[in-house]
Length: 377
Image (tube, rainbow, N blue to C red; front, top):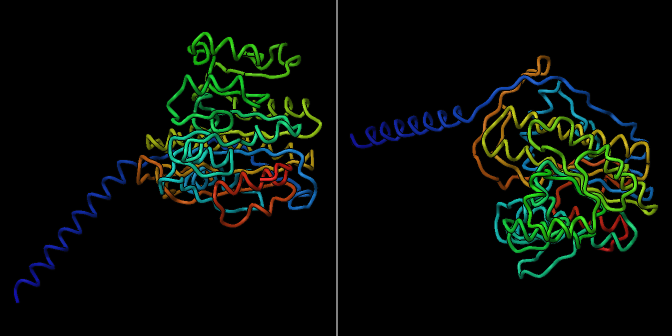
């Protein structure tokens, strides 16, 4: 009879020690941040949710941006973001074909092609067969297509929209796919990364693209295909992401009467979450929201542009634990340093935006975009 109290006491002590250990681990992965308040744009919603023809689509992907990152950035910014001002909201399931927790290559491919694939694959199905991506489907129909990212161009998400390789780590092969792609505009990585590619790849790219290192380069206006490589895509990049979003919209708009497709990636939310850098996560999410603002402002002026905002997956199991919107204070904790299988939020604005509400697969998003632009997916 004396064994039961002893076992209960032992179990209680074990659970207490386990809880203390877990609490210490959580505290070790905690971070605090005071944000400098930035504007958050609220559109008029005049064309939002209407049945107007969609002429342009801007797909913005926040790498690793789950609900925790969105909440942290929103409350650190006084309780508002441009994306959280939008009226159409949904969720995206991100599982890959061979893993319950996706990587960026598989999820990027799902967003780019409308088909699920294995982790690590770019533009190929599980049988390693080439899958056409959105630019390859839309370019023959007259659409101008582009990608930009705060990652290198061989990063999994931008690469999914032009490359076809069985492994995301095949950097040289991914760069070598660019000259034969359907992209009219690309901006990701840096001059040094580009010049580190094999000379044959550099020459092939220059034969198809005007390569510039400054957005004010006079060669931009006369080009038919443009590769813009900034000096940095790291923390010292300034307003590169929102400014280049505006640049890409203007560039693509001027090169097709039919319309355009643009993918914009905020890549470094994920990188900060992998290192459990809470201040960096908030900063990167806020920077991504400025790119969203640029896209939404254009969509409101144009009236025929659909903006879709989501993420390839969640990273870090990021949680907002405390915030004070008045001061910009936010405190967050991470339960992981890896990707998680949790659903990610989706926001949409423009004609037919309501079609993106509810719960959907990442591959469904591409299918809806292609149907709206006449790609018959």
